Amino acid sequence: MVFMGPSRFLLPFALCALLFGSGANSSATRAPRGLFEIGGDAWTNPGISGWRAEIKWSAANPADGVYDWSRIDGLISNSITYNKQIGLSITLLSSPPDWVTKLPGAKTYNTSLGPDPMVLPFDPVVQPKIIAFIKALCQHFDDRLDYIVMGGLGYKTESYMPLPSGIGLDMTVSDYTDAWVASSAFFIDTYNQNLSSTPFILASGAPFSDPQAAAAIMAIINHGLLYPQFGIMQWGLNATSNNGFFINKLIQDNASDRATGFQLTGASDGSVGGDLKGTLEQALDAGVGLGADWIEIYAADAMNSAYAPLLASIDSELNVLPGPTPTPSPTPPPPPKYLLNISTRVDVQSGDSAMIGGFIISGNANKNIVIRALGPSLAAQGVQTVLADPVLELHNAAGEIIASNDNWIPLIPNVLPVDLNPSDPSESVIAVSLSPGIYTAVLQGVNGSVGNALCELYDLEPGDSSVLNISTRGNVGSGDDVMIGGFIVGGTDPQSVIIRGIGPSLAAAGVTGALADPILELHNSDGSLIFLNDNWRSDQEDQIIATRVPPTDNKESAIVATLNPGAYTAIVRGAGDTTGVALVEVYALDQ
Image 1 (tube, rainbow, N blue to C red):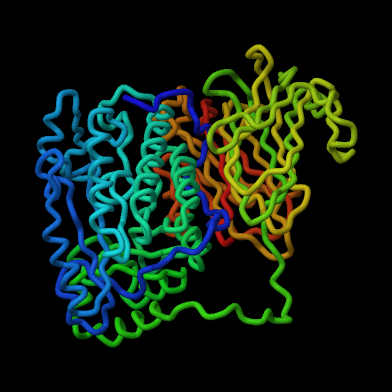
Image 2: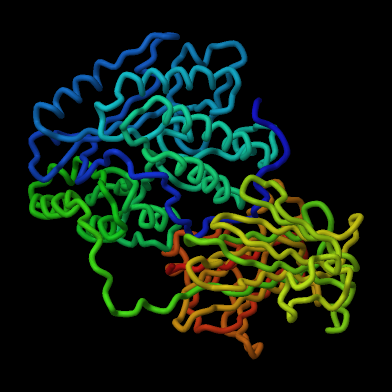
């Protein structure tokens, strides 16, 4: 395999309800608009603006260097005849040509994602053939299609990938993630270099069920946002879709200057795909509300005459181009809502049991942050077995160390607010201005020492940028050694959050000694218990599923709550006083 190296993604994130500003260099030169039909006969349907075709690598590349574009050329001819738009999705990894799979050293894998075996995008034998196909396709169809949904980033056209343990691949999740990110960025670069005006679209979703997945997909999205023609879509639009799901929020935030769209999760009659969780109208309205330029719908609905008035109306809405920016209203904006200061106390061990804290900064401006690692001073609060000499590192989304500290005293005078100076010289502090993005703080003991420590993050200037989502992974013991996470809801209005206590699913990510059955408690500022959950399906199941980030294991815990501004504490302990490595997460849902 290629692209191996040290782990670039230390973030212990699952899906996050975030996102950054667009990061676009300029507006895309074109964007599809309206309803696009998958299958059927969209050409003569007045309520449909376009047709979405699909091409499989196996059919279009029958031999090395030989390409057959005739079917898509015919569809493009139809689109011109009937004055329709046309998009194309590319199935690569799960549709390799026979001649590719027979190359010496090439490997295919059976997965739980579908019936078709797939190749891996970073296979050193297969990857050059993928690149050659992408180049040939882009050069043939550039400026003849209204959009291309990129293939090569996952199973079928989506970004979904199997975990290495699920396909018998001897790779750590970290190395596997690094390889996937590197190959995906390489493919995105190839699409950009070979398309002069056609938008190339990422069908976005967390690539696999693992705490590192959200960091990985965000690294890929941020790479794509370097290019004006890069666009984003989500495969799974339904009646309950909202910006609480991080991909939907990203689409909404980039709708003004990017090609952004959706595909319905299924047909309204259930004949294909998943459940719309409501009516067809509700699902389409959800997509319009999230800022879609186009929405792909199935032929069963597109060809149903009963839906003709609805489809014509939605198609008309999607085809309205944004007008000039209106004069700002004198009405003051609503007060911001954000997670302000965050702290987690945990028993710091070595290896997988080091404390790893992730957070996301959203918005459009740099954010002044202070991160503290406290150990010795906890003894004065009655905490037993404290970490004598904590060391603190800050990593960016690429896993690079961008700041570190061991013993805060030598810092430049006045770099910290006086009230944030630790009381012990062995404790550590990082004060830094960070641009919007994903970051990880790693807290360890000098020379592998262990003990209870507190990691704190302070947002010094809430404003155009906010700290939205946080997570901490560490060892959960008993008594004083449970995991205790504190956070502050800022602003003046209530904030909806989901808090998760994750344990068993960490084992699939290669974490040893994961907590088998986490129990989650939420306390208010006076210490009163306001929520408790053990096994997330036992309470609030529907609300948790609606957030689109339910835990993947039934023994894990979650709480959905709307909290007034103030201080709160989440505690993770093991059922029956069991111990192990766990993850506590707090996500802001309605940003």
